[in-house]
Length: 118
Image 1 (cartoon, rainbow, N blue to C red):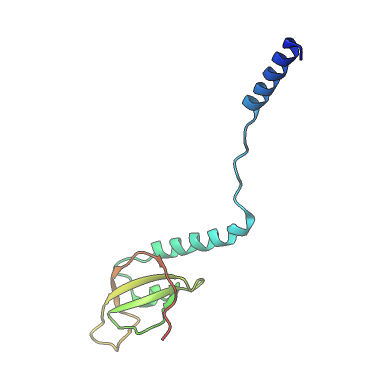
Image 2 (cartoon, rainbow, N blue to C red):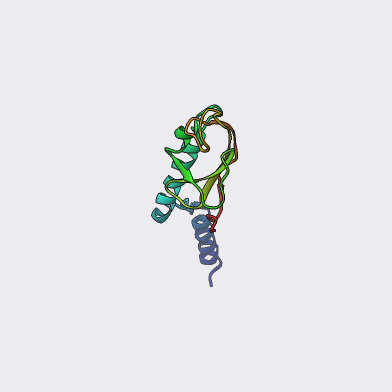
């Protein structure tokens, strides 16, 4: 092969390599609903404040499975059986157990786990 042709081919090959820009990968549309779920769950979790009442929390989370106690309760996110938060309460002394007026004193991190089965 002629040295000029070989040099030209090599130059064109390297120019093509340098000019190539890989496109960033786009999030697949099948993940979008899951991302929206996690975003909503984190937003709802962030709205739980120390001092809120049990009735405020139970709009976004439901009682998780398993044995529950009035002072410490495990909740499951309403839109996913795998997202949970543990809440501790100061019980309302003038009311029954699991009173809607119990005051939140501590919350765990939002975590992923299977729902307990009794």
